[in-house]
Length: 491
Image (cartoon, rainbow, N blue to C red):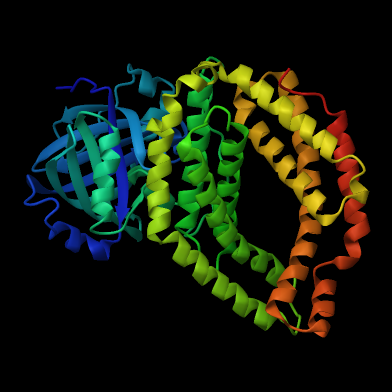
């Protein structure tokens, strides 16, 4: 028989170190589990991953001799908090049932016959029913492995599903769990983790556009934008390592994008919690920035006699970054912002109700116009600006670029796409030129901090391209003129 859709499940996914899981199970927090069972799940797709590209995952799970087929759609989630449609049906055996009359399959056509196993997951599942406040939650701990071909990765995660009550109680329970063992909000489904095993061993994830639509409210648009930033941060920060600078770079980009989103929407987000969240992400970004600055400097110093002390400083900066990322403060911050995005004071404030309910297309036009004016004004007489003023212009250009990328889906006609591309090209050129100038200024500060001496400073200055300053200023000025001449794509 087919199970009816249960609509949307609301759950909070948390990651826990496999080495800590026993301590959690043996603690007094949960008590004896309601159920303990083993489950074997096989995930299916076409060789071209057509289901994943369409936003679905499909699995057949066997437990106790029963087979359940589940199709899940991508949901709109903050870090760890997931609310997504899913469809289930009982099966007589391990083979999936592909009914091409259902809307999910209709777009596949003949490719439906190409659906085959991709990877499988074996876990031991323990479940508890717990009360938190006035809510009832089901807590599930899954431990096992996901396997794709000859590659595998551990699975150790907690899912807290709301059965009755208020979704905010999910976070209260998560904080109680974090008091026993460290936990981090999870942003990848098991299906996504399996798909990662099919690709490169390490893969730094670039920003991805949030799903926005023209009739969407400004509140929902911001929530999706911020959630996309948090997802990019989490996926990359889990890979941060001094041998793979790309992951730290993208984690830092995600923080910058999130901070920009908080900044350009600050009128709508006004409340007591906003300041603390912005401050915490600024501090975390600064810690990652120290390592990133040394990544850039070390990359430009290949062959220099002074590379060794720079490399030593870089390794130390990565140790500080890793410590910050694993700290209780960062874990608390990620839970705090996930809860704040969904249930924070800004979502119920009477003072900002009109701003929250305004159509996203309307509010984004105002945001883009404001950021556009600021960049055009700040870049006048660019060649005469000092380092600090150029850095301020660079930050303004980033905010405009990020806002352009955030809201691109709302302005997707042919004319808007053409105008947007011209603006983004000019912004990218401006950012690269100003970024190189900023790297030169930053390299000088780093050299002073490392106290390597005047001879080292002279050699390092040559390695970081100090003689290119005039060319970079000219390139930045041309890019700014192109921005001034650009026509708004949002009007």
